[in-house]
Length: 432
Image (cartoon, rainbow, N blue to C red):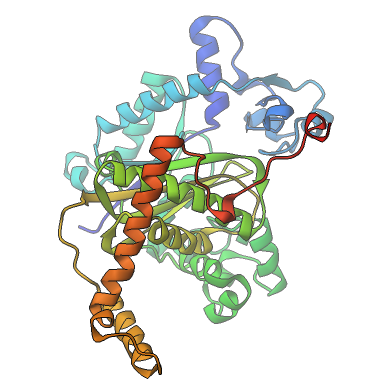
């Protein structure tokens, strides 16, 4: 049978989990039944609506809206502070419960995951019956509700789970696109943020169906590679697979929540360089190389997205990982403010495994050799050809090794790349 994916998403996760905890401990009311939100201290960058109840939606309160604005719409709004340690516990309980139905899970955020239903399909009477059983079991065992989207494409399963909430199961197969997806406004398309939606509207693209039948060349001319991604999603084109927990556990990665939202490419690249340097250093310390790089973005709206690619040859090079991360980022970023960035490496192999040069390496090397041959001051033959490629690779390896050694001895801040260097601001004491 064809691959079948479930996308499982907790309904208003932070608010639901807070409500369940309140009822369990007898310390509060069920926030899901009244106009309420989860929000926090603006000085800690949590002065926005993190989650809202269904009654709060009637006041047109939006996720990521400033709390002050929400209170103007509903002065009687009940506000509960976030408790991330508690959210983590409930998230772990959910994933453990779901794995009892099928171990092939890919957790993509604290409150959502994909399930590859295909291996266990024969255990259930139908797709709907299986999804309904899972949905109901979450409520009976853990006390909160989830939506489940079902499709033959991961991205369509994600969009199906968002159709209508709460506590529902929806399907969105490729043969249902014209009826279920295409009539929706373009803003409902996965990864289509405000700026992308506005650009598409200026092109006369108002619905997802408008985008699906449009000329992709025109879309990419205005939105670059992200436009191609959106066009693919509108047409149900997505060949990604579920990355299971086992694969995730065999990776090395790093992420950082930014002190202020990043809105420009150069700032994002500086963060990616720092993350790539950290990840590559840990790879070398573990005597591992990677064959797959993943970049994660969490927007200021708290939407999390990620993109990964395989590598032609295993690497532990900071430069290689950084270049790949930049390419993935440019394909993934929709232009909206970024709250968190992450770089992760998977499909690891031992450092001492032999490395085979790719055709790309050989082609680049041939071009390099030709350029050297044409030079009036051509170096000796021993320095051209594949040996020159290996020499350049070895130089990068020696540089990385030297930097690792210095940082290990004198601290991580003892050597800093010029592009990451930020001079300390002078204090009044310094001036004195």
